[in-house]
Image (cartoon, helix red, strand yellow):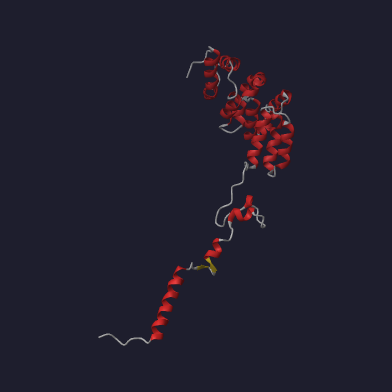
Length: 249
């Protein structure tokens, strides 16, 4: 037995309510308080910016997206100094101006003092480089050993090896004194800084002759000299067909 029927006006009200519910389900929902269809028609992003409404499309960054990295190198003070020194050694135009500019930019007092110490070794004038090298004969001028080694490397750079060749013998003659007055590792480092830039038979001859003329040279220092000269001897033999008296290692 069926239940009591609804009055005519009651059934009609229910049909109206159902139609309204179906229509509402087909209508796009509001999102964050705004109508979705209305939001979809609003221009956003780069297109909106390019339309001239106050935002530059070239600098637009959507929310949540990280900023683009800065283009170009970002170097430290030490790196800028190394770059200026490398340019000076290679003899680029305006090298002295580059070094002057870098001096003015250095804020660390110790780094500034080091660059000023290095300036003669970086000079394009061989006379200035020779003068600095001769100053190393005094122990007082060898106190900052790391600076001295950097300067010797610059003086004997492969691009300047021919100009430094006349001072090679004097460099070898200083090794015994350097052992007595400097750090335990200073003699080998001095020899490396002196010889690493040389690859000629003439340089190999000078080292070979020095060792032949000093048969009683301290064995430890002789070993260090042979160690530092190993690449020099090898390159002289391979490139210049050098035939020295020192045995191959």
